[in-house]
Length: 98
Image (cartoon, rainbow, N blue to C red; front, side):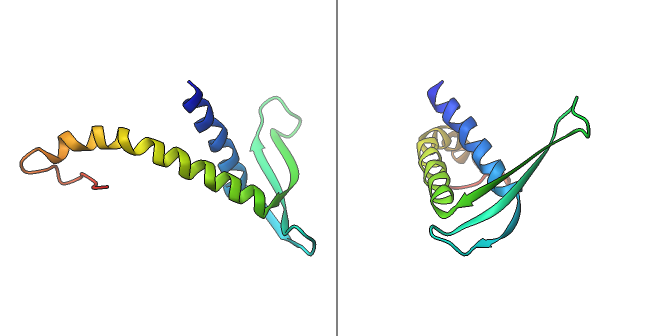
């Protein structure tokens, strides 16, 4: 459950970084950029939830490190799923090798 909770958290962080409307970089330290996140939000006046914020290089690094750690943790599970398929003769055409 803890792993799934971490996955949900990183998915939200990734969504915010990947789908934000980015402004120009701020000429300050630490390097950062303004961003606006727009999500559909039923039952609001205009059907939207609009939030402004700042994204720093440290935030991007933290999200990337968390995502990499979770990906590495999933490798053994992927191997368990992929291994039986690779043993089929011939292997399925749509199989992906890690």
